[in-house]
Amino acid sequence: MKKKNNVKTSSTNAEHLISELEVHLNPEKAQKMKRYFKTDEGEYAEGDQFWGVPVPEQRKIAKKYQHL
Image 1 (tube, helix red, strand yellow):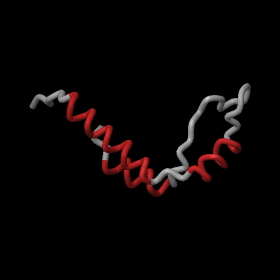
Image 2: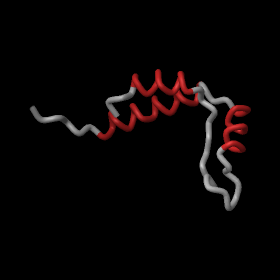
Image 3: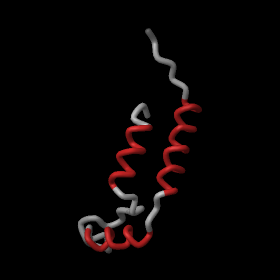
């Protein structure tokens, strides 16, 4: 059985995934994470970005979109 490669569907699903993550954004938590993971210039996580999405929510969303 051959699997179809439907880029448009995958793209749409990825957009839904990002939209769902955005619903759970927590700027305060993201700021704390940035400090904890040392994201300032010259530090080991320089340039990393955090959204502050709680891990339980990340897991629920990841399970829903595991086919991507």
